[in-house]
Amino acid sequence: MLITIITLLLAAAGFVWGRIRADIVALIALLVLTLSGILTTQEALSGFSNPIVIMMVGLFVVGGAIFNTGLAKMIGARLSHLGNGSPTRLFLVVVLATGLIGGFVSNTGTVALMLPIVVSMAAAAGASASRFLMPLAFASSIGGMLTLIGTPPNLVIAEAWEEFSGHPLTMFSFFPTGLICLAAGTLLLIPFSKMLSGDKKRNSGSSGEKRTLADIVEEYNLNHDLWRVDVPASSPISGLSLGALSLRAVYGLDVLELRVVEGKGFLKNVSQEAPSASSVIEGGDILFIRGPRENVDRFVADYGLSIADDSDEARRHLDFFDIGLAEIVVLPDSGILKETIAGLDFRNRYNVNILGVRRGGSYITDNLGDRKVAKGDVLLVQGTWDAIGRISRDTRDWVVLGEPESQASKVTIDYKAPIAAVIMLAMILALVFSSIPAVFIVLTAGVLMMLTGCFRSVADAYRTINWESIVLIAAMMPMSFALEKTGVSETVSVGLVDALGGIGPHWLMAGIYFTTSLLTLFISNTATSVLMAPIAVQSAVAYGVSPLPMLFAVTFGASLCFMSPFSTPPNALVMPAGQYTFMDYVKVGAPLQLLLGILMIFVIPLFFPF
Image (cartoon, rainbow, N blue to C red; front, side, top):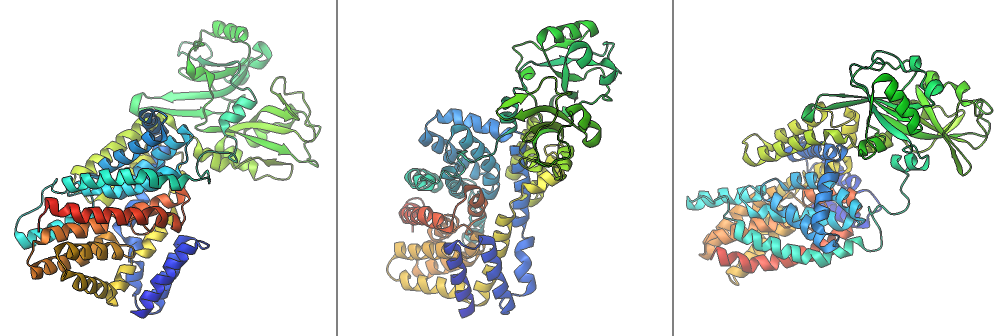
């Protein structure tokens, strides 16, 4: 018992200290308990196969797809509109929406779905995401108290009550107390959350961020004189290569992108090609051409093409689904100095095009072929993301600015947003109404997101998984075995209940509530409710009162646990994204947990008398 207590206290101290990552602290504690013989190998590794942990992996993938397709940005914009520019109103929209969703979807699933949406919303509003993310996690846990299926502890006490009384709890038996708890929690979080944004400017999109692709396009003025030209099947250029057309020589035009759109609606698929002389044009293709309007009109008239109207927003912007941009800085001793742009032959050598040159404070995009490379030049290249990644690894003559692979992963595949929305809604409905285990529903949704092209590659999908959160939760879950095997849980719970039970039913319920709340800091809320439910029933029977309010004290105490990042999966999920420290949870979560606990001790008996 002593080793278990010391290990957990040192782990808590490590979390508070914050100099070592939380997942590493959890792993160290797990190793100590295992090597000391308290945990078996199977028990120590059980967290890594736990359905909740596996479900979190799937939810990260689903959340990544929501972000990757731009769906998060769209929903975030709607939420921002409801917020009407007011940070407080925006906060209320987030918390209340999350709480209501949390009543029907697991709190872990709710947070994973809402997290990318809230980050996008905060960025659009110019606000700090850190103010919203921890309240998001707390609201999901509070919302779980609205219905029978909102959180596993509710099901645990429902089973205990039915075994005792023979009467089941209904879907909305929890709703009155849960609604009061949600309203009180929302009001308390308004002032508490302001402590999270402070002056740290975390996740606020402030200075220090790298230039985006849109910034680069704007700097080089690539959207100026950019025209979208559609090639009908009847056009005489169908089947010809770009080289055969000699657009630059005959018309003074440059093709920046060759786009193919297949299918419509949910089955729509877009592929892009960085144009080369060998690129073949087919009917239905789209060309993005740069040059004077009169030259474009002449080309369109000669070959029976159609040009997007000036008011068409689609003609004004380059997209970067399959192809991208990058700047490369020419080194002072580079072997390509004094060579002409045409002589570099980047298209054949590296499968990329050179679209412009930044020289000093000027940008050169016209008549590039004959210009010679000079010291200090920055070349703007265009090609597939893979091609740009390959050229970034050649560091003899140049250095690529930024990280192309990281940049590629940030580009939204917005035409896939409808598919992501359908999969997300189907997953939510299945979680609410289906009898299939939640972990398989979430994994199915994650696989569908990958199969339907909501990610550029499977590697992109795996990159969305936050392994720090996964390891943290998986390493902390086996702690419940150590606490139970060494008798710590039973000693603490029985001792506190015995000490307070003789004073009165309210004090007995308070003892059960805060004992449960304390244990949930170290073991999962489900395990805590399983442990405390029979103790609550036995204590109530011995005292001569109804066990029902005592059981409700167990589920509220187990679910409303906010003062540590590892007490519930939602708390851990938002920790990296919000850049929170352990003390942030103590500073905001501890008073919220205490005040809601005091409130519920008085509210529960109003609906479930002793």
